[in-house]
Image (cartoon, rainbow, N blue to C red; front, side):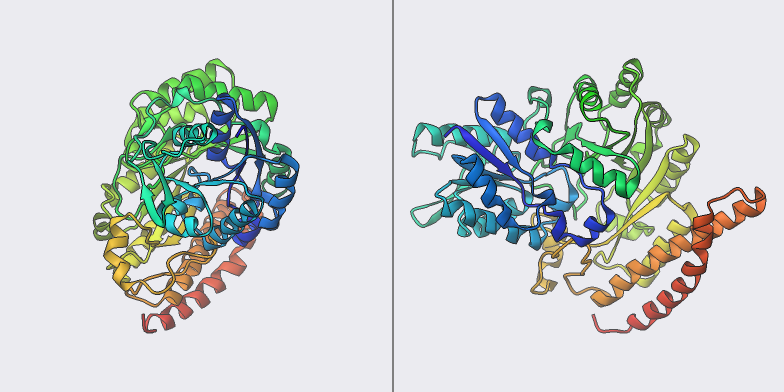
Length: 485
């Protein structure tokens, strides 16, 4: 067992919202696993489903590569795979079926498989990896290659044995991330990613992870792969990867896809120094917390390193809702962090979540007011999404309907009974977006009046759409308030 075909279950074609946006990122965790197995003597190849039209295209890769093992290893760094979309689950089941027809063993590692391992085993998978997968994958593959039948001492796997489900001991997370080789970027058709980015955005962005895990305990946030531990790569290793990618593929922008970027004290300062020392020129976006972004030295180092956009998990403008979520931040901290980022010319962007348990009309108004007052660079709006293993899921599972997962990332269906009907929250999403864009257009008109014509004409003209659209959306939203939840 020396030849491993890696794949993953995220098909851009099955996620129409993201396909239209046209900003795909390579399956980073898959590339890490492939690099790790190659470094340990295995021959690896990749069927990248990102641009495939359907799961049956795997057949060609199976016939061409003739692997001894198929590993479906999803990208645990990407929120799209953490959402456990049913389109992707069904595609994974189909790929499992295709491999089993060829008598090829299948190992699966993903957030969805961790949460629903019995479904994947019933679909034909031989093993599901629970949690962080590289070490488990190597131990399991070595054991299978040696022909051993005793797999009980390998931590982090689930499999069927004599008609029952066997789960081995939990595996500890990897602390020394620098011990891993750089991701196997050579397996990816980078030119395809670059072409799509250039066509839709006018620049090319690439994804890099500097950490794994998150120590904070927001009760709606699922962490089935990396857990609550927080481990970091060294700034030196990250800059080494940046140099490699710049020299071999070229990029203008980086998405640092960590749950929280630079939480380790002094990390960002050291990283900024190395970026400047190596004369690397790029911009990047991060995800962070409002309380972390209150530190001037931290924010100044972000600016020096090239940060142009910092996304905060603001979630709500209501302190009551933030407390109910166990966010550990205040609305005032969100306001102060937004202000500090603007001082350092870093664009503040906000993740917003509607529909949390107990949210009222007044809470929604407070959130909209916060957005309108802070005017972030971008907003990302979702509705509360219960995932297994979270405190939030336990609170609402009795009120959940038959549907437990979205089909794709654009569905935005509220899956449990709450203050308002699901149609209200979908309309609220539309209203808040259009209202936000209306405010942007208003700002651009004011700039034009003050600066004698120097402003964004396109955004100015958008006012003629967003002013009436916002009015109609508000009327529709009002009518849905009284619809039975």
